[in-house]
Image 1 (tube, rainbow, N blue to C red):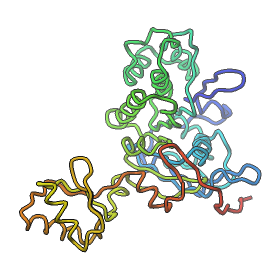
Image 2 (image 1 turned 180 degrees about the vertical axis):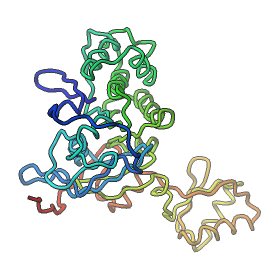
Image 3 (image 1 turned 135 degrees about the horizontal axis):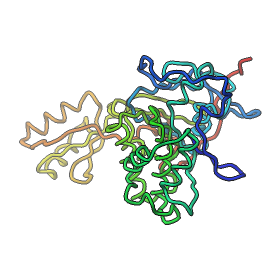
Length: 354
């Protein structure tokens, strides 16, 4: 099921209903592939501008996949091509091991999507809004509606008018709409946009539960570094429509940077000793520990120096955040920030296929 806002008002539809009835629904019973979503050389050109450029993505079953990039990087365009709402200029999309172009009904009947923002009939209750959406699915029973309301934490407000909801509650109700029909893949486009910190936390916790408790694969697009770092298990970084990197979040962030955090006691003695070492280019206090800049191959030697001096080393770990990782990849050239700054567009575009 998908939701979109048009000039004529709010429209809900099953993604599979935008195709001709002659495309018979295929059985959901099939061998589960390792990847629920893959794109191959995916590209979209608007006149002379490439919004998405030669994009190859791989999303494994059960992942919370973070799709990260600044505003205008091509995230929403990519999602619309994934949901067959926009026709690609180049490349292809594969869902559940099948070509989206050749098996639209089969693929999209297993996908729930919330594109851009959620909207509702404000004078109706949450339950009634979901009943209306359910009618577009051919009818959804009360039990299924109660279930999705419980999943998103709105069961106790189900019969309240939506106009009384906070922005965060409306976002969760939008996710409930996407969950009707029990999709295997849930695609969420900037679900925390415009939320306050409490609302962001509520949506973040919900996304984690969808994966952990309900075994759904979640494709989450965002321009917020912290959101991806705290929520996603895998990620891809896109800028100017071009893929920069993708992989498991923990693996990408675990790559040594030469900056380590050390919990050592007594701390002041450890700091003085480290500053005397030629191998240490910088050492400073940060929070409850020390941040030390040293060549990766010399980290063990630093630990040994502290221990041999009788200093208790309680913890030692690489220090890296997603923001630091992104800046390392891009050379710090204003690619992205927690506020979503952009860089200039100078990527080469592929030649469109005929």
